[in-house]
Length: 306
View 1 (cartoon, rainbow, N blue to C red):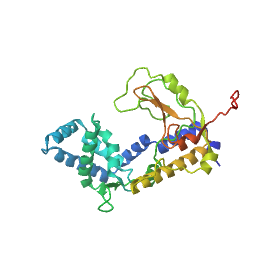
View 2 (view 1 turned 90 degrees about the vertical axis):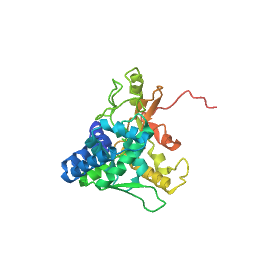
View 3 (view 1 turned 30 degrees about the vertical axis):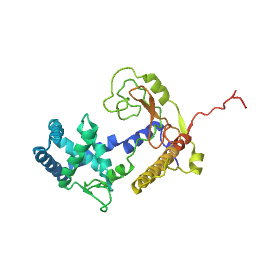
């Protein structure tokens, strides 16, 4: 039986957001870390390791980068890094993990942030809260978490992903820092450092968000999703297979939950509108576009036959 027949759409939406939204799961992980004396001992060890590392003299550009860390709360930084790495329940690429963690530094220069967070992650590896290693000499560096978490939380981590589309009517947007989702807010303007409080035509975003959509389940059942370009490395092939599996899980979830959804939208700094989604959205590959239809169907009339 579909969950859509058991609960109102709004209630299912709340469950989805608390189950899949990393903004919430991050909070659950942080609570378990702070409640575990052994992990907090590693946090404090990490702070000491960072202080020792930062106190040394390096080349000029590195000294300038490290100077920016002096204003940060190092304990909170270490906890934030541990939270991010806790998602690595199986080996994940070091470059991918550190690029995701780079925003924790709030540097204006992204390459500098990525380089610095990579160095910080290498230093914190000495706490044994996680491992950095290679499967073989030719392989890329990978990260694997050693942070103990409850089985319930591990289940949340396994399910964490880009938020699925909304199942109920989206919240009406009234400011530039808001979300159509029910349980969190963020900037409606894409791109770090681009947020402002000027006019971004919220009425247009609200109109776009209100459109009901559905999946073409017949299409999804008969046509297999293929990569836009054939992956040319084993790592890229593995990433594609992971994305494909997650996509089909998401298609199944939405279908089981009633197959009526809304995509939310944001704008870039030039005012162009972008649908928000990863597994299901209207601005992806031809397959992704073909899989989505308007929920409220109408017969089109007055179209020339030749």
